[in-house]
Structures are given as C-alpha cells and as structure tokens.
Image (cartoon, rainbow, N blue to C red):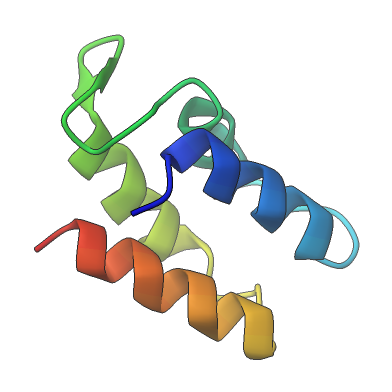
Length: 76
C-alpha cells in the first residue's frame, strides 16, 4: 500500500480546479501522514481519510474513483 502523503500529492495533481473547501483540511492533513495508524494532532489517520472521503464528493473522474477505492481499502 502507498503512503498517504504520496496519495495526497496525486489527489492535488488530479483534482481539477480548486479543492473543495470542506475536503481541504483533511487533504492537507494527509500530506503529513504515512498511514492510517498515524495521528495528525488528535485525529487518527483513519478519521482524516474518512472525513476526506465524506467531503470529496465533488472530485470526480476515473483517477478519483481509483484513489477513493484505494483509500477505502486502507480503512478496512
């Protein structure tokens, strides 16, 4: 599995236009995480990824579907 910070860079590259304001703090936190067991402040990586997925519905396309699927697998 890839590190969350690597995935976050790919999301930044693929997300066309401005990242949704509700997803931005979670995507920013993902840049500082290696895996879902790490913590960003008081939030676990699992929480960060879950909240990102909940707020990233505006991010669409084939790459978005692939990465969202990868992130969901990390939560299992």
